[in-house]
Length: 475
Image (cartoon, rainbow, N blue to C red):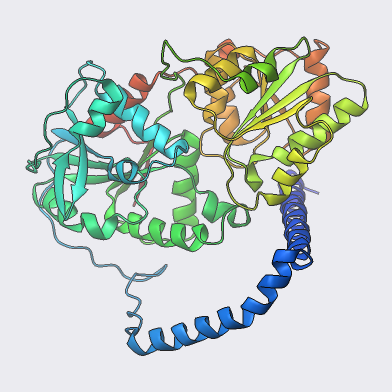
């Protein structure tokens, strides 16, 4: 058998293992929800609700019938499909980049405190740190098709008095960066795009990952079609993409080419690395429950990330159950808000016999408390199987904490030779790696992990746009 066939067979085995992992997660989630349904049905409230369900169904049916009468027919699908001939609007000659207008509208309207909003806020903070860049950068927001300054948003991040927002006049060579999440923004920003291109400028879109395309079973059911529509619209509207890692940039270029997705001619793709410095308040103090979780002699391991299938909290829990069964006195602290398909995982955590003793979960930790936990942790555990970057890796390493993470390409890019890697989605491999780390057989070096400040990330973004520093160009 040839080397290529061996490699393809190994790839098939890994795909099968990932599918089995996803199936196991969904099976656990289904069993959890079924249990909760039975509990509701056989409770007092369940018996009361049983009599209300026919009424609810009748009202829903009547409402749908009335809505159908007034609902307009669905619009014809006009988006080009793969292989279709695409005609793009005529535009003037592109001018050299003169200014970078950074759209932060989505984060101003919807700050859910996730990784995307963190990137938007910290990059904006870096752009206004007082350093000079290749071209000026201005944080902007869109309102009714008009582009305005985001002075209040900036003032909240860097301090100082905020001048009233004013309309931004598009100038020749302006570059418009959609840094914030742009799921629903393209229609609203269409007039801005037109002005940018009429003035010889370009539209740049930040892309955080391709997870809904590459790992749809890891996502909420609403996310996949929404992301699919967004990506195809973004490919037609954007002159270039900036990814948050080289891995995502390569994934995007390869995915577009492999699936023959329509895009603007000469599409440019580049990347930057996220920062790792956390803004802290000098007067901040952690709550007692946070301090109690780490004030022990036993080694403390921290797992940071939204509770969702791809983050691997169940892998971490299984690994620590193995360690506890072998007599290892170690603590696992899970930090993260509820995400989706999380009921089974949350149930396993809060109903675990070690919960509150050697197992903890905090869903409301702010940056100051997260930094406190990093400082008091023996190591970070990051068992995710799909990421766009991996902020906890660089945040923990910046504070001198060792990192143990899944062996996936983007983690190799970020963790370099400084992290300890284990086979993805393998709880036994994680337990073995933690054991080796505790016994000194394997040593992590946080100093070798990627270290970038947010102001460096901001500078890289401006340089990529101003200097046309792109890693891939699609014909």
